[in-house]
Structures are given as structure tokens and as C-alpha cells.
Length: 401
Image 1 (cartoon, helix red, strand yellow):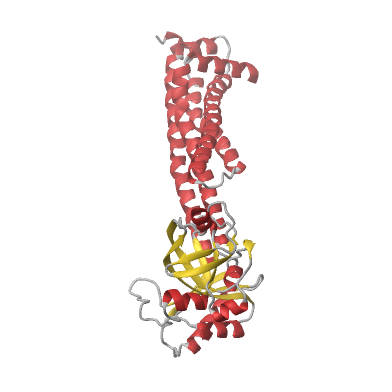
Image 2: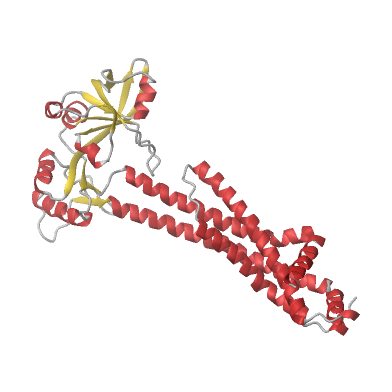
């Protein structure tokens, strides 16, 4: 009986193919939008996590001044080399402590030039950033202590200034300083803020301070905690030590800030997940609209086919058979819309993730949920028209014109 009912439903749908397609268009758009939004959101979340991971593992940023509304950082004194030495000597559970100061500088090689970021630091910086060398070597201790003009460059600087040629041993002019290239960094790509992390030149801290910055200030400090060590504990120790060194008494506000990258990553991930859920919920409203459209068309269909229903009831069809016929029609329409919507959503998600340069992460659970939900829409919104058809009086139905 179910097979015959399905055939009748398909025949009725084929008789009004255009109307049937317009009926399920709301389901198609709703399912497609939900799948596309969730897939794009998952890819965005994964990209944010990957970009945060590029900045380093278990990383804390220490900066002079407090940041936020009404908090000026310009009056806070910068860090110095003795602060770095104290942190390295007294902090436990850390992999590396790296000073960093940076400035924008003009790079010149031959007839080529560009403006890039130049950083003054030491080899610990690469440890905190989980950044390896593609070629060359790190700074020697004598180069760090003596402030020799050597540098390690990023991929973008190499491509823009040197092209395909070997860069090791060549001399690059940084502002007015001639600097020997001793290393080439691995590729990092764009950060989550859209900046090119490979457009960088790294120099020994003392060389940068003497020849480019003209002072001994350190703009910030990077601290990488060891695996298994809670960054919150390391943060507390950093705050306690720096308060002592900077003479901040009890009850006074810190004139520095310590940021935890894991907390920033969790916040960013939470925001993208909330936005994904919000967009998915908004897209899901169109499923409700599609369900109302199915109910409306099925009611029209019952009215148009009143005489047909009367004949079936008059020759012995049971109410439940008529109910099942119209219910199956509604479910078939919904499932068809769900299948087309899934294909449309995956196609839109693939195009969007390719354009946004985020990974395409297929979530099979959302596909199953969307398909099941589309079937439920057919059941819920198709039941009332089906019940109305089943309860028609055969005599009155036969008189209907």
C-alpha cells in the first residue's frame, strides 16, 4: 500500500511540477543557507585557531602600560635588558623569554627597495614563536652581545628584493645600515589580523637599539610557557616579579599588562562560534517559512482535488489512506527540497571558503540534522492539510465543482 501511495504522490507532484518546485524553494533556501553558514563558520573558526597557533605555543605578551578606555600607556616606562635577565633567572616553567622592539624601515638591495617591519630581538624570539629557519643560521652569542649588523629575513622580503637568488651572505641595507643576511625564515603567511608575517627582518637587539632605534628601550616581552604548565600561573609570577622591579606598591595599579594568547584564542573562537550559531539560526527561519509554504500549497491542492478525494472515499478508501497519501506528498516535497538544499549549501560553502581562503570543513552532523529537519517540516506542516482531506464528507466532496 505504501508503494502505491508513493506512486500517487509522485504523480500528483509531476502534474504540477512548477508549483511543486516553487513550493519547496523555501526548504531549499533554508537548508542550503544553514549548511553554508555553519560550514563557513567552522572554517573561519579553524583559521582563527591556526593563525593563533602561528603566533606561538602557550604564549604570553608583556607590554608597558595598561590598555583600554581611559588608560594611557605613553607614560609607562619601557622595559630594559635587566628586566629580561630577571625574568629568565627567576621564572620557572618557561621555555623562553624573548625581548622585542620593532620599527618600520626602508630596505634596499640593488635597485629594489621596500618598507618592512624590522625587529630587534635574540634567538629566543624564534622559540617563543615556534618559528624555524628555512636556510642559514641563528645569531651567534658574540653577534648578540656585540651588536653586529646581521639579519634574518622573511620569505616576502626575500622574494621582493632578492628574487629567486640565494640570499645568504648578501648585504641588505636597512635604512642607512648595511646588514649581512645570515638566515631565511620559514613561511608563516598572513596573521588573523591580515598582516603579512613574512614581511619582516630580524636583527640582534643591541644592533637594532644602537643603529635604528637610538635607545635601549624594549617595547614588549614574549614569554613561552613549557608544555603542561598553566599559563595563568606563569602570568601571576610575571606580574609579581615586575611589580617588585618597577616599585609598584600594594593597592596601586600595574603600569604594565600581561596578555595570555590562549585566552585571546578562546575569546576569538567563542565569538566565531556565536556568530556561526546566530547566522545558522537566522537561516533556519527560512525553513519555517518553507514549511508554511508547503502547508499553504497542500491546502490549495486539497481544495482542487476535493472531487477526486470524494470518489476515492466513495469507492471504499479509508480515511487513513487518504491521510497517508497527502502526508506522503508533503514529505516527498520536503525531502526533495532538503536534498537539493544540501547540494546547494555545500556548493555555496565551497565557493565562499575558497574566496575567503578558509578551510572547507564538512560537518556531517549538520547535514543529517538539516535532512531530518526537512522531513519533519513535511510531517508537521503536511499533517493538517492531509487530515482535512481525510475528513471530507464523500457526498459533499462529490457535489464539489
